Image (cartoon, rainbow, N blue to C red; front, side, top):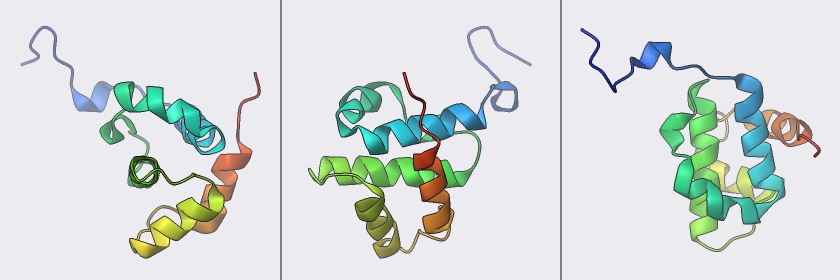
Length: 102
């Protein structure tokens, strides 16, 4: 039975394009991470485990005061033995190239 104020996980909307653009924005502008960590949790990425892995790696690098770019992110994922599970170098490149210009 559905309780008021609660949602069913399978009914939560998600958008692959938005998820990829959030990740892209965080990689390209590390200052956005300061705000993002207050609002976005890794479980908020519904599309796939790939996005959760990438987001966690971004947050880990940020917490260590490392700059975040394609090179540092892919190396971090490789060290964690998660690069393939995150979609590989090619997928990270696709995400970065999908940036929204404002």
